[in-house]
Amino acid sequence: MTDNSYSQSYAQAGVDLRAGYAAVELMKSHVLSTMTPGSLGDFGSFGGCFAPDLTGIKDPVLVSATDGVGTKLKLAMVMDKHDTVGIDCVAMSVNDIICTGAEPLFFLDYIACGRIFPEKIASIVSGVARGCRESGCALVGGETAEHPGMMPEDEYDIAGFAVGLVDRSALLGPARVREGDAIIGLASSGLHSNGFSLVRKVFEISVESLAAYVPGLGCPLGEALLTPTRLYAAPLRALKKEAEVHAACNISGGGFFENVPRMLPEGLRALIDVTSFSRPPIFDLLMREGAIPLRDMYNTYNMGIGFALCLPPDDISRALNTLTAAGQDAYVIGRVIPGERGAELGL
Image (cartoon, rainbow, N blue to C red; front, side, top):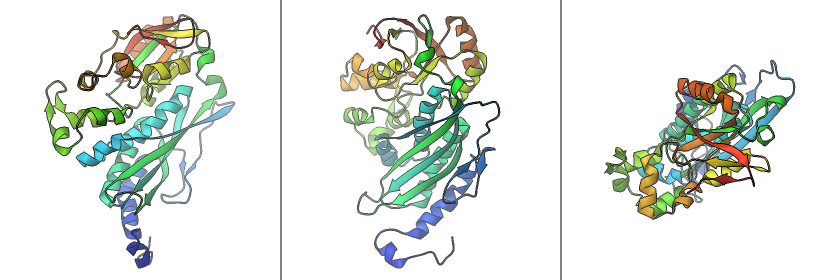
């Protein structure tokens, strides 16, 4: 941008174009670090261009998803720590599209704020870029909007969307699932980005309370709560090369009861053994401090399993070995049985 691109009148109304340009310069290196072979066009162009590699794909299907981070952002604002929520933003969309078997191609973000503080915006985008790099997708564009009068100066919201590609013949989903399939769960990093309205109701959210060390957690409360959502694109990519995956689900808002049935056809249900996997201590602390019934916990949170998938029982050993080699803790958490579509947890 040139020095001529400045409006004193607009600045007096609360929108400082120069702050926006400064934020763009600060985030530039983060964005460029995500570029993949399909990335086209210059940084800062009007539209993000991407040329997908269609080698070996006979019937290409584009898959898209959009989401935000939700009220977890309140904690980031109180703690003045903004470099992880961008990871959450990427994960909430990418973890959805990979459930179809799609390979993430690119991501775009949208940040709305009361006032642009360039360093803060760049910190947020650094997290977005990290999430994109971990997922193997490019950050091809985005938007930062200053909304004076609509939002307090120091507050912001972030949302984004991802686009992926899969051959129609390789689409995962309920049509592939069979009675007797094993259900493998991939460990979460904690709360991820769901249920934070309840979290904020249970815990006091202040600089002091979030900085307080909690022996049962082994870290300050804020650190445990702000732990970013785990990304599953890389381990699932490795798994699909070694095992026959039938369907997958991202265990996000709605927990087990809402998300697990989404990968099942009518006439089959998931029998889940909740004793088969580890539960991070943040869930027990939340349940105890909030006097939350166990069923409500499993109907709101991932409880330690952030992603689940169905595959033939003969592939269990190979799948677990592959996921472990990819750095992902995984467990056999259940199986597919006849019955009304749903999730049976035996709580």
